[in-house]
Length: 576
Image (cartoon, rainbow, N blue to C red; front, side, top):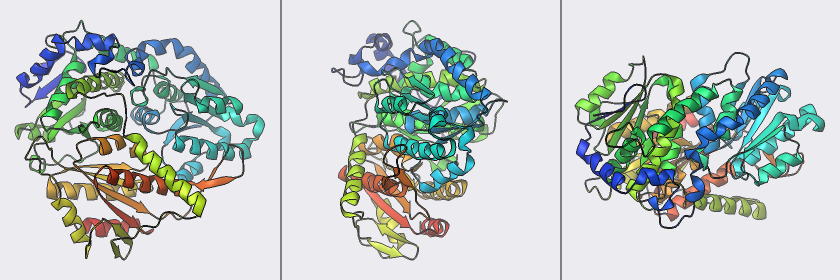
C-alpha cells in the first residue's frame, strides 16, 4: 500500500489496509485534522491544560521565516570574529535536533564546528572542555524552561572557565541563550550581557521545537540551508492540511499517525526504527518525540532506536518496523525484505535527499499528535517526568545536610561491582534469571509484552557504546525482547516519561560507576562557591530515577561498577 507520490512517499507492508482505514474513517468523520489546525484541544481531552498552549509547532515552519535576518546576523558576526567552535549546552528537545543537523549535514566550509553536551558525567564535561579554546568558542545555552538543572549547571561551569580566559568585559560575547520569554535564563543572560537572546514561541513544547529557534539557530551556525529545510517542512504541512483527505489524498502524516496509534493499541507497541546511515541520528529525535508524547495513562509506544537489525526469528509479534531509506542507500534493503517476507509489518519512508528531514520533522510531529488521538491520550504533557527530579533533589538536599549520600545495601557483591536487585541471589546468573522470569510474554495483548531498558549512567564514549550494544544484542537474541539503551541523565529527557507512565512492562537495568575525577558546579556564574559537583548530581539523578521507577511498580536492577567498566561489562554480558 502506497500513500503519496514523488519524494517522501509512504509505503506500508503487512499491515491490513482495512486496519488503518477504520481509524482514518473515524478521523475523517470527527474532523480530527481540521480541528488540530483549529487548535481545538477537545481532539485529545475535554480540558485544555497543556494542549491549547502547545500547538505553535503547527506554524513554526512559516513563522520562522521572519526570523531569518536575526539568525543570519548572528552567524555572520560569529564567522567574522573567528569563532572556530560552538558548544551547545542543552537536554532533550533542546539538544537532539541540533545533534541531528550536525551529524547529518556536517559543517559548511567557513563555518564553526558544533558539538553538543547533554551529560552531567564529569568525564564527558572534561572531554568537551579539552576540545575547545574559550577564546574561539561560542556557547549556546538552550532550555525552554530556563531552569533545566543540567543545562544551567553546565552554563555556570563554562561561564567561569571562559571568564578566567577572556575576562569579564568579553565573557558575555561568548554566550547566547535560546529560551522562552520570562524564563530565569532570559534574566540571567541579560545580567551577564550574553551576545544574543533568542526568545522562542512559548506555545511550542520542547520536543516539538525542531523547526523553531531551538533547532534552526544551531543549524544556521554550521551553515545548513534554513530555507530548504523550511520549504520541505512547508510542503509536508500542506499535505497534512484538512483539505488533503487522509483516505484519498497525500496526507501521509495522518496515515502514519493512524498506523502508529492503531497498531500500538493492538499490541504492536515497539516502534523499531531502521535508518540509512547518513540520517541515523534522526532516530534519537523520534525516540524522544514518540516516547515522551505517548507514554502515559498506562499506554505508550516504545521507540527502539539504534538496534542492530537481526534475522526475523529474533523478533516477537510486538514490533512495527519503520524504515527510512535515503535515495541511493540500499544497505538495509535485504534485511528489511527478510522482515516483510516473514510477515512483520513495515512502514517504509523514502527520502530523496537529506533536506527532506525538514518535512520529516513535521510529518512525525503531526503523526504523533494523531497517534495520541487514536490512543486517547494527551501527546503534549509529561505528567510523570517530575517524579525523578523531585527524588533527585531530595538526594542532593540530604547530601548537603548530612555530607553523605543515602546508604544502600547491595544484595550481591562480586569482584568489580555491586548488585541492587531486591532479592537474594548467589551469582549474576541468578540475578538475570530472576529478572527475565518476571518478563511478560505478551500472549495477552491487553497486557503487552515486556521490554528491557538499559540506563547507563556511564561516561559516553565509543568503547562504552560497543559494550552496551553487545549486552543489548545478547539479551535480544536470547529472549526476543525489545531492548533500548540510554545514557543518563540524557534519557530522562527522552524516554523517562514513558518508563514511568506506560503499562509497566519495562524491565530496567541501571548501570552506574565510580568516576576517576569530579568537577565542582559553581553556585553562581562568576562565583567561587560550589555546593555540589557534577559527579554527585549524576549520582543523585541515578538514585532518584531508580526510586521513581520502584515507586511506580517497575522492576529495576542496579549494577554499580568500580572504575574497570570493560571487565565488569564482560562479566555482566557473559552471565546471561
